[in-house]
Image 1 (tube, rainbow, N blue to C red):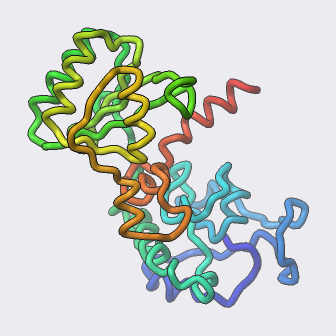
Image 2 (tube, rainbow, N blue to C red):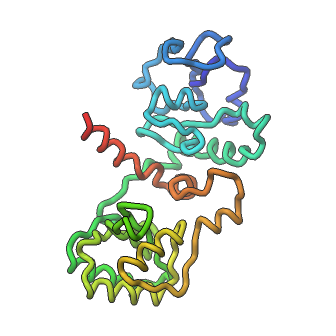
Image 3 (cartoon, helix red, strand yellow):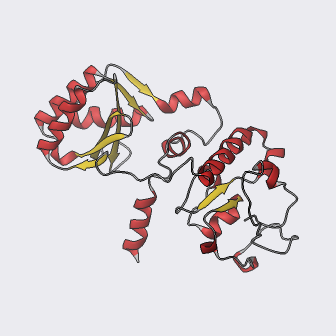
Length: 269
């Protein structure tokens, strides 16, 4: 599904790996910007296993998402596969890598090579009991990877007027916990400090989390790596350094905040 009829050769782009029907949101090719009233597409998406959405207009029409660059090449709602518009490559050649990767993902989803990800509550879970938190941290100290990924959820941006609601920790790939700050007593804090002493601490935008953890828990850190700074060195493109964007780009978990937004929408109705 594209905005309006175009001359783009999608058969060539997809290397004739699969057959597809072609639809346009608006039949009027003179329209530069498609408004809701301009949409006259007739399609029953239930008749298709997959629906490829070209550009932000198609993405917004069929899903609740708006940022095509964040979702390109990612599976949404077990059916929709967004792609940036290939026409943009003519004036934004730096997007070529993103386009090529996204097309490969689309082909892999359709062929069955890539599968929808189901996040297990056994691999990722919340901890609200002090005993369980203590047990998990002791377990983490005994894991073989020499690092621990750390993130915080807070009520504010500054330590003096904000509090830590919880601490996320991961010492193994595809496994992690969120520890509620209310269950962090002296024993848990002592064990957590030992974990930070023994392993290299990985953070994203470390100066924020460091300030919160040092101020509220008196933690100290000797060896810290900041993935945000790493990404600035690897890719200076503005607006690409956020944790969510990088997680969507480099992991299989997609938009991990989507369930939260859906809960908020349902709660506010």
